[in-house]
Amino acid sequence: METPSHTLDSTFAALADPTRRAILARLSSGEATLTELAEPFEMTLPAVSKHLKVLERAGLVSRSRVAQSRPCRLEAAPLREAAGWVVQYRRFWEGSFDRLDDYLQDVRRGEDAGGEGW
Amino acid sequence: METPSHTLDSTFAALADPTRRAILARLSSGEATLTELAEPFEMTLPAVSKHLKVLERAGLVSRSRVAQSRPCRLEAAPLREAAGWVVQYRRFWEGSFDRLDDYLQDVRRGEDAGGEGW
Picture 1 (cartoon, each protein chain N blue to C red):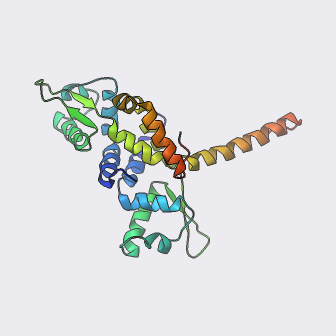
Picture 2: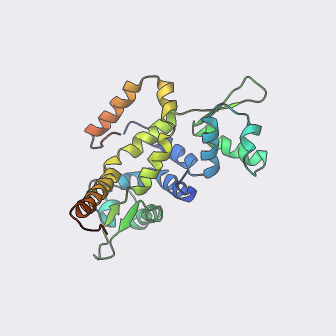
Picture 3: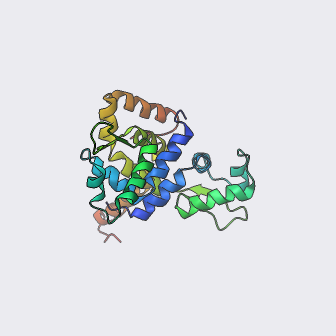
Protein backbone atom coordinates (compact mmCIF):
# COMPACT_ATOMS: atom_id res chain seq x y z
CA MET A 1 0.00 0.00 0.00
CA GLU A 2 1.27 3.44 -0.88
CA THR A 3 -0.13 5.23 2.15
CA PRO A 4 2.53 5.31 4.86
CA SER A 5 1.40 3.23 7.79
CA HIS A 6 1.98 6.02 10.30
CA THR A 7 -0.45 8.28 8.44
CA LEU A 8 -3.27 5.76 8.69
CA ASP A 9 -2.28 5.12 12.31
CA SER A 10 -2.61 8.77 13.28
CA THR A 11 -5.73 9.33 11.18
CA PHE A 12 -7.63 6.38 12.65
CA ALA A 13 -6.41 7.19 16.17
CA ALA A 14 -7.60 10.78 15.77
CA LEU A 15 -11.01 9.59 14.57
CA ALA A 16 -11.45 7.21 17.52
CA ASP A 17 -12.99 9.92 19.71
CA PRO A 18 -16.50 11.40 19.51
CA THR A 19 -15.37 14.95 20.39
CA ARG A 20 -12.76 14.95 17.64
CA ARG A 21 -15.28 13.62 15.13
CA ALA A 22 -17.72 16.32 16.23
CA ILE A 23 -15.03 18.97 15.73
CA LEU A 24 -14.47 17.74 12.17
CA ALA A 25 -18.23 17.74 11.57
CA ARG A 26 -18.39 21.35 12.75
CA LEU A 27 -15.47 22.35 10.51
CA SER A 28 -17.17 20.73 7.52
CA SER A 29 -19.55 23.70 7.55
CA GLY A 30 -16.75 26.26 7.64
CA GLU A 31 -13.71 27.58 9.50
CA ALA A 32 -14.08 28.14 13.23
CA THR A 33 -12.02 29.48 16.11
CA LEU A 34 -11.16 27.41 19.16
CA THR A 35 -13.81 29.29 21.17
CA GLU A 36 -16.46 28.59 18.55
CA LEU A 37 -15.47 24.94 18.41
CA ALA A 38 -15.65 24.60 22.18
CA GLU A 39 -19.18 26.06 22.44
CA PRO A 40 -21.23 22.87 21.90
CA PHE A 41 -19.12 20.83 24.33
CA GLU A 42 -19.26 20.80 28.08
CA MET A 43 -15.49 20.99 28.17
CA THR A 44 -12.88 23.53 29.12
CA LEU A 45 -11.00 25.35 26.36
CA PRO A 46 -7.76 23.51 27.24
CA ALA A 47 -9.55 20.15 26.91
CA VAL A 48 -10.90 21.07 23.47
CA SER A 49 -7.50 22.50 22.55
CA LYS A 50 -5.93 19.14 23.37
CA HIS A 51 -8.29 17.36 20.99
CA LEU A 52 -7.54 19.98 18.37
CA LYS A 53 -3.82 19.30 18.68
CA VAL A 54 -4.41 15.60 18.04
CA LEU A 55 -6.34 16.54 14.90
CA GLU A 56 -3.60 18.95 13.82
CA ARG A 57 -0.85 16.37 14.33
CA ALA A 58 -2.89 13.94 12.21
CA GLY A 59 -3.12 16.57 9.46
CA LEU A 60 -6.92 16.66 9.72
CA VAL A 61 -7.06 20.27 10.82
CA SER A 62 -4.89 23.25 9.98
CA ARG A 63 -4.82 26.58 11.82
CA SER A 64 -4.25 29.97 10.30
CA ARG A 65 -1.09 31.69 11.50
CA VAL A 66 -2.44 35.07 10.44
CA ALA A 67 -5.39 36.14 12.54
CA GLN A 68 -5.05 36.30 16.30
CA SER A 69 -8.02 33.95 16.66
CA ARG A 70 -6.18 31.41 14.47
CA PRO A 71 -9.28 29.90 12.81
CA CYS A 72 -9.25 26.14 12.25
CA ARG A 73 -9.92 24.51 8.94
CA LEU A 74 -10.75 20.95 7.89
CA GLU A 75 -8.06 19.18 5.87
CA ALA A 76 -9.59 16.22 4.07
CA ALA A 77 -6.56 14.47 2.54
CA PRO A 78 -6.06 12.05 5.46
CA LEU A 79 -9.78 11.22 5.37
CA ARG A 80 -9.36 10.31 1.73
CA GLU A 81 -6.55 7.90 2.62
CA ALA A 82 -8.66 6.40 5.39
CA ALA A 83 -11.61 5.97 3.04
CA GLY A 84 -9.29 4.35 0.49
CA TRP A 85 -8.19 1.81 3.05
CA VAL A 86 -11.66 0.98 4.40
CA VAL A 87 -13.24 0.74 0.96
CA GLN A 88 -10.92 -2.13 0.04
CA TYR A 89 -13.26 -4.21 2.19
CA ARG A 90 -16.48 -3.08 0.58
CA ARG A 91 -17.12 -6.43 -1.10
CA PHE A 92 -17.36 -8.01 2.37
CA TRP A 93 -20.07 -5.80 3.74
CA GLU A 94 -21.89 -5.88 0.44
CA GLY A 95 -21.66 -9.67 0.59
CA SER A 96 -22.70 -9.88 4.22
CA PHE A 97 -25.72 -7.65 3.72
CA ASP A 98 -26.22 -9.13 0.27
CA ARG A 99 -28.23 -6.06 -0.63
CA LEU A 100 -26.16 -3.51 -2.54
CA ASP A 101 -29.31 -1.41 -2.86
CA ASP A 102 -29.44 -0.85 0.89
CA TYR A 103 -25.90 0.40 0.89
CA LEU A 104 -26.49 2.72 -2.04
CA GLN A 105 -29.60 4.06 -0.37
CA ASP A 106 -27.55 4.79 2.72
CA VAL A 107 -25.05 6.65 0.58
CA ARG A 108 -27.86 8.58 -1.06
CA ARG A 109 -29.24 9.50 2.34
CA GLY A 110 -25.75 10.73 3.10
CA GLU A 111 -25.92 12.87 -0.05
CA ASP A 112 -29.18 14.40 1.11
CA ALA A 113 -27.43 15.18 4.38
CA GLY A 114 -24.73 17.10 2.51
CA GLY A 115 -22.32 14.38 1.34
CA GLU A 116 -21.88 13.28 -2.24
CA GLY A 117 -21.85 9.48 -2.01
CA TRP A 118 -19.15 7.61 -3.86
CA MET B 1 -25.92 9.81 13.10
CA GLU B 2 -27.44 6.40 13.75
CA THR B 3 -24.17 4.61 14.44
CA PRO B 4 -23.53 4.54 18.17
CA SER B 5 -20.51 6.60 18.98
CA HIS B 6 -18.82 3.82 20.90
CA THR B 7 -18.87 1.58 17.83
CA LEU B 8 -17.02 4.11 15.71
CA ASP B 9 -14.65 4.71 18.63
CA SER B 10 -13.69 1.06 18.93
CA THR B 11 -13.57 0.53 15.16
CA PHE B 12 -11.26 3.48 14.49
CA ALA B 13 -9.12 2.64 17.54
CA ALA B 14 -8.76 -0.95 16.32
CA LEU B 15 -7.73 0.26 12.86
CA ALA B 16 -5.06 2.60 14.24
CA ASP B 17 -2.41 -0.09 14.25
CA PRO B 18 -0.52 -1.57 11.27
CA THR B 19 -0.47 -5.11 12.68
CA ARG B 20 -4.22 -5.12 13.20
CA ARG B 21 -4.79 -3.74 9.69
CA ALA B 22 -2.48 -6.45 8.33
CA ILE B 23 -4.46 -9.12 10.20
CA LEU B 24 -7.67 -7.86 8.60
CA ALA B 25 -5.95 -7.85 5.19
CA ARG B 26 -4.91 -11.48 5.72
CA LEU B 27 -8.42 -12.46 6.77
CA SER B 28 -9.84 -10.82 3.66
CA SER B 29 -8.41 -13.76 1.72
CA GLY B 30 -10.01 -16.34 4.01
CA GLU B 31 -10.28 -17.67 7.55
CA ALA B 32 -7.06 -18.27 9.44
CA THR B 33 -5.95 -19.64 12.77
CA LEU B 34 -3.98 -17.60 15.28
CA THR B 35 -0.81 -19.49 14.29
CA GLU B 36 -1.37 -18.74 10.60
CA LEU B 37 -2.06 -15.10 11.37
CA ALA B 38 1.11 -14.79 13.42
CA GLU B 39 3.39 -16.23 10.69
CA PRO B 40 4.17 -13.02 8.75
CA PHE B 41 4.90 -11.02 11.90
CA GLU B 42 8.01 -11.05 14.00
CA MET B 43 5.87 -11.24 17.09
CA THR B 44 5.11 -13.80 19.75
CA LEU B 45 1.77 -15.60 19.62
CA PRO B 46 0.58 -13.76 22.79
CA ALA B 47 1.38 -10.40 21.18
CA VAL B 48 -0.63 -11.29 18.07
CA SER B 49 -3.36 -12.73 20.26
CA LYS B 50 -3.61 -9.40 22.06
CA HIS B 51 -4.15 -7.56 18.76
CA LEU B 52 -6.72 -10.17 17.80
CA LYS B 53 -8.64 -9.52 21.03
CA VAL B 54 -8.81 -5.80 20.19
CA LEU B 55 -10.22 -6.72 16.77
CA GLU B 56 -12.71 -9.13 18.35
CA ARG B 57 -13.89 -6.56 20.89
CA ALA B 58 -14.41 -4.10 18.02
CA GLY B 59 -16.50 -6.72 16.21
CA LEU B 60 -14.06 -6.79 13.29
CA VAL B 61 -13.08 -10.42 13.79
CA SER B 62 -15.06 -13.41 15.04
CA ARG B 63 -13.62 -16.75 16.12
CA SER B 64 -15.20 -20.12 15.65
CA ARG B 65 -16.08 -21.89 18.89
CA VAL B 66 -16.19 -25.25 17.16
CA ALA B 67 -12.77 -26.30 15.96
CA GLN B 68 -9.92 -26.51 18.44
CA SER B 69 -7.86 -24.15 16.27
CA ARG B 70 -10.70 -21.58 16.52
CA PRO B 71 -10.21 -20.06 13.05
CA CYS B 72 -10.67 -16.28 12.78
CA ARG B 73 -12.97 -14.63 10.34
CA LEU B 74 -13.31 -11.06 9.09
CA GLU B 75 -16.53 -9.29 10.12
CA ALA B 76 -17.07 -6.32 7.85
CA ALA B 77 -20.10 -4.58 9.40
CA PRO B 78 -18.02 -2.17 11.54
CA LEU B 79 -15.93 -1.32 8.46
CA ARG B 80 -19.13 -0.40 6.68
CA GLU B 81 -20.04 1.99 9.50
CA ALA B 82 -16.56 3.49 9.42
CA ALA B 83 -16.77 3.95 5.64
CA GLY B 84 -20.17 5.57 6.06
CA TRP B 85 -18.72 8.10 8.46
CA VAL B 86 -15.60 8.93 6.42
CA VAL B 87 -17.52 9.16 3.14
CA GLN B 88 -19.55 12.08 4.50
CA TYR B 89 -16.43 14.14 3.85
CA ARG B 90 -15.87 13.06 0.27
CA ARG B 91 -16.90 16.39 -1.20
CA PHE B 92 -13.87 17.94 0.53
CA TRP B 93 -11.24 15.73 -1.03
CA GLU B 94 -13.08 15.67 -4.36
CA GLY B 95 -13.12 19.43 -4.21
CA SER B 96 -9.35 19.49 -4.00
CA PHE B 97 -9.14 17.08 -6.94
CA ASP B 98 -11.51 19.23 -8.97
CA ARG B 99 -9.21 22.16 -8.40
CA LEU B 100 -6.24 20.04 -9.45
CA ASP B 101 -8.14 18.98 -12.59
CA ASP B 102 -8.87 22.60 -13.41
CA TYR B 103 -5.22 23.42 -12.96
CA LEU B 104 -4.05 20.55 -15.18
CA GLN B 105 -6.55 21.55 -17.85
CA ASP B 106 -5.20 25.08 -17.74
CA VAL B 107 -1.68 23.74 -18.19
CA ARG B 108 -2.84 21.59 -21.12
CA ARG B 109 -4.59 24.56 -22.73
CA GLY B 110 -1.32 26.46 -22.40
CA GLU B 111 0.49 23.64 -24.23
CA ASP B 112 -2.12 23.52 -27.01
CA ALA B 113 -1.72 27.27 -27.50
CA GLY B 114 1.96 26.75 -28.30
CA GLY B 115 3.29 27.29 -24.81
CA GLU B 116 5.58 24.86 -23.10
CA GLY B 117 3.53 23.91 -20.10
CA TRP B 118 5.39 24.74 -16.95
